[in-house]
Length: 210
Image (cartoon, rainbow, N blue to C red; front, top):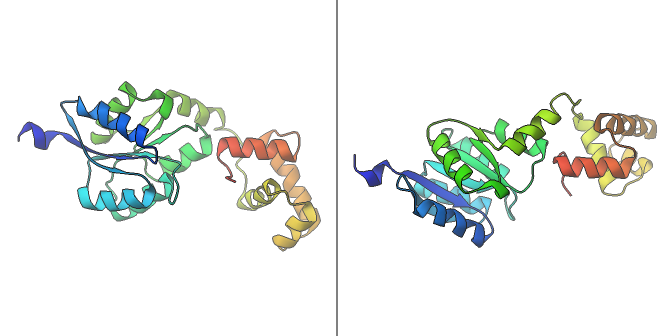
């Protein structure tokens, strides 16, 4: 087998050209890697994946049109063996767990690229997972937390949208007392002092998105 065919074929996906350029420059000087394609959003990532069938895909989590998590799920539904490393500026535990459950091969913060990214690409190609230390700490920190129920998350989304309890009750076809009960549970589980604090925590941890 020649050196060229033995290289790890990488697809880079990010909506910021400067990030893609940085990944391309890193890969260009690696004797065991080659960049075979780029994409700027999730939909283009799926098309590029179908065209090139990369060994490893490096993909941003937050992108317009279609985000990285949705693209990850779509690609792995079609290609179950796809090896995808998620890149993000967020270290929210909920996002990390969602990505790993969806089959991500790695989860790295963008502030820790360079050597860590190259090692993660090699590990992914060998079938191993890589999670950046900061992301691992975030998972551990909230590992024993009581998870919010789907009903509580629905209430929390409406709280974040500025709805009062009566409006929430009407929209969810439930009683105001039931909404108040869920709000108390949300505050308790998140360790929040009030509704605004709960929204802030939920956004930071990626439990809800605005």
